[in-house]
Image 1 (cartoon, rainbow, N blue to C red):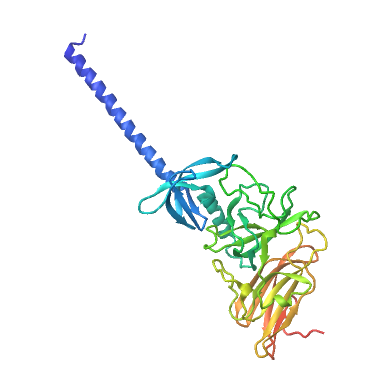
Image 2: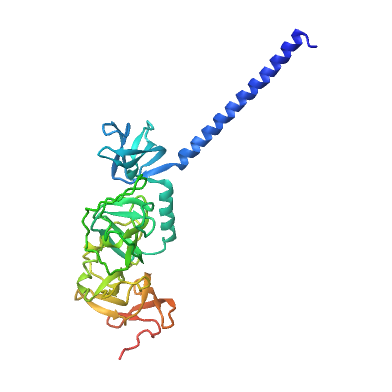
Length: 391
């Protein structure tokens, strides 16, 4: 039987061990939680897509403005909440609790519509990386505000990255026809929810830019490349009904009977015109020059999913001495596909496209440019010998 001294000593040792173990456990848990918090702050971030927006003290209408943030600013997303619309409790808007990267590390609330989550932005960057070698095929702008999406699909709002303003300009690097969704509007000029909205709603009273085309079974989507001044996301998809092609003023008057769907300059050393990040409006360019243009016949019947991108190649030369354009080449009707690429420098240039042959196989075909003894631009189509005279 233990005496009192031995018993007390044993109890003290046991208590010390339990206390030490508890302290170590608390310390480890604290470190773990701290690490998780640090990881969360790194992975849960968003980029401001609005030109400017306010971080507010709360989600209330009367909340104080704490800090103005601008497009491209990165914020840490700490939490989110769905807030009922004061005018209609059935509608909800998502808000993010965020931390800014200013000196004070301002924390507050901002509407989710003003933020593009990092994972969404990463998806857009991945898309742009995959297409970085594709040159701009045309330049366009929006004639009505529209949604920039990750995929060419209007069936839901999960793929919406942000809302682009009417008049926003961008480069087209490709397009695609998809089956037309039943019951969808003929445009995207509605007030569709922004990323993070809690409910799906549309403005049925919004006017369509064009009358619905009931006979059409497909809809056109453009894959576009955007300037950082317009969107933090470098690439995405836009519904075709909202897009207006900005044909350069130098060539627009040569458009007869068929639509211009893609164009590239051939003179000087401007083959890299339209590279990512340029915001120049080529439609307003007055500098005359030589161009390769892809044309497409106007539709008399509903468009098909697998129809070609263009059906004729038109090369417009420019004679500097007389300051006049001339037709350097016009192809027979064909079934052609993007992308259009221009390579080389000065007089040693080529352009290439993809064309379907008689067997139905699509091959990349290259056209050579040269100038004859009189300095006139000539084109050597595939299979022909340079300089051979036509009958």
